[in-house]
Length: 166
Image (cartoon, rainbow, N blue to C red; front, side, top):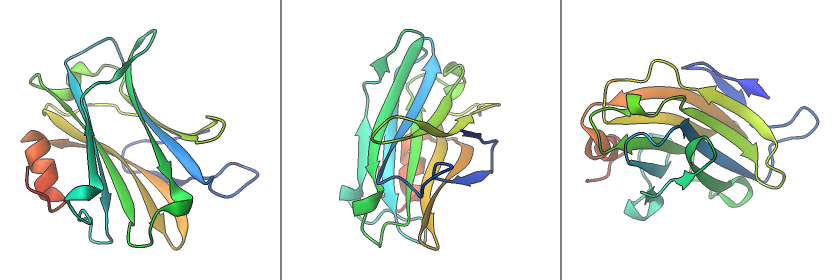
């Protein structure tokens, strides 16, 4: 498994095979923290949502033994060509995403759950939202980028940044 730092990227493949047909993107943290929401948006080559229908928002993370997590299955094999990236952001209802202690993004194979890439988000911003990671396609290959960028005005600002209204 590859471990990323902010700004780094890595291909989504195992040592012995190309990108899996499906990947699971997991955003997990320790403790319960503030109530959180996950937003995932399918974007074009300009980083804009293809349409309002190309976004999903979840507000109920799954409790785990040590904290909470969101998990989203992305079917890379059937993703339309006009989808160049999928952006994953978290928002908390409290003042700051810093309450998400130990936040880590992990991309796993969809079939076996084998971890491919992990991004432990360090130095969480003092903002209500954070763009955590992006799964993207470059030259026909799927990759993941560690972003960790704060969004000072929350989900509304994130939606605007991808061409959607809040």
